[in-house]
Image (cartoon, rainbow, N blue to C red; front, side, top):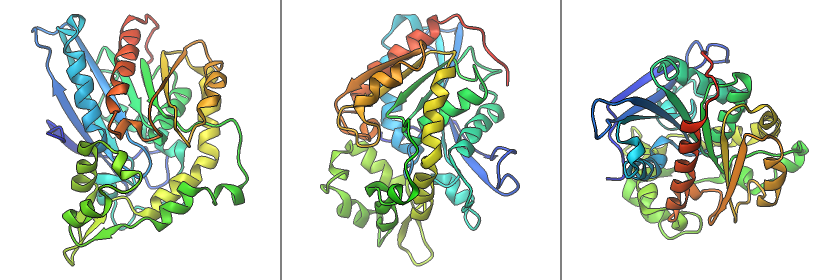
Length: 332
């Protein structure tokens, strides 16, 4: 099964501090995995955040493999795990909820950080669980770092594969010429059918490196049916472009936020990444004694690539470290 079936799917308002709070909503799903030995003695929540241009279901294969590995460890035999995944307001099911008013010109990475906080508050992840662990990829991971900076000890631990973090603020004219930013507006977004979409992507550069389950979830859950019978990307390409451009400041803010960390954070770099230069790993690690890092085989899309299993030990290691960490928790 490529998609995990949630026990709850709901829509919540975006964070009240942000533009659009009067009309926009977020799609959130909950997955429950009871401890094999009952009664449970601990409850742990994981919050999963996706990359720009993608959606929550693309993380499901990694989520499932992480759970499978957790269930092999005797120390968690009496631990209930609940996984929460959500779509950024202009992505996936959230974009469909916000159809007709999805575009907020000022939307940026701090807005996504505040929406991360909103999911935690609305779903009561601090009140109802012994630990809260965040796993965020790229834009989603950078937003988690910013959220933790704004509200220290919101999370108990973070595992961030391929965050987009940079020390410098690039000139606007240079940034808008970057290949991913130019490519976002050129991306094909409409096909006659899901089958036609799959056939157009399968085997092509970038897409051929995705795990088959991830590509299947992209086609099945990243598209919606239009009134003329065709299928179209839920995330408008103009919104993907907007998020990329907002990284002009969001990425350096995430980098600067690392210095204030008071919880265990593990950053995973992909050795073929073109988004965060792996050579900056030492500089990133030096920002805080709470940071650890690792280097794995793959590109920026490693959470969705054929070798996505390489991330499971990294997430498990951060989980173990978080469970052993004795720092006091904050209440939002």
